[in-house]
Image (cartoon, rainbow, N blue to C red; front, side, top):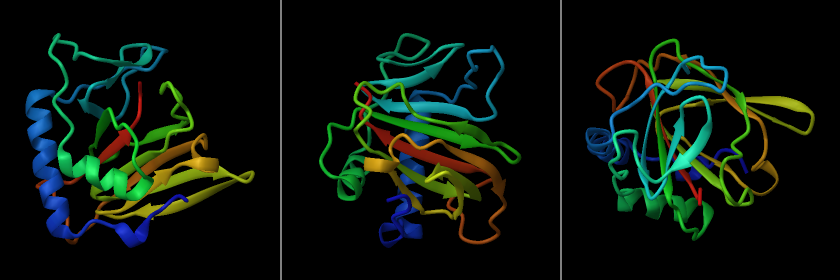
Length: 189
């Protein structure tokens, strides 16, 4: 299963998630990670949970932020919704990506988690994006609007995927500026 449209977040729920996101970012500021080749990525990243994703030339999970502080706790509503979508898992990492206008995230496979059979649930907020997933020998594209939920689990867990571009969404964004936020729930450790 890729998109879980029947569980899309209402505008009211989205606003609560964005409030939660701002609270996490206040304790764990957004940073621009670097690829293994040393180039800055087009997104800025933060995290919550026991483990946060970092990229300083190497992709990995770490129990502490770059400043030595632990990551903030994952908000309870995020844990509950991820469990509702993907089942009961020991969620220990919530990655927050901020896509400014013009940002993208190239084709990749999430493979830094210890158990690659655990699902990944992503919640989208703000501007629409063109999301691509490669499976069955083809590239499949979807528009993810604000409130959309995606699930990479079972046979889709190791599918290459990308955020190809951000599409300004003129209506009903819970954000105060153009751009997209994603919150990705994972079992990293």
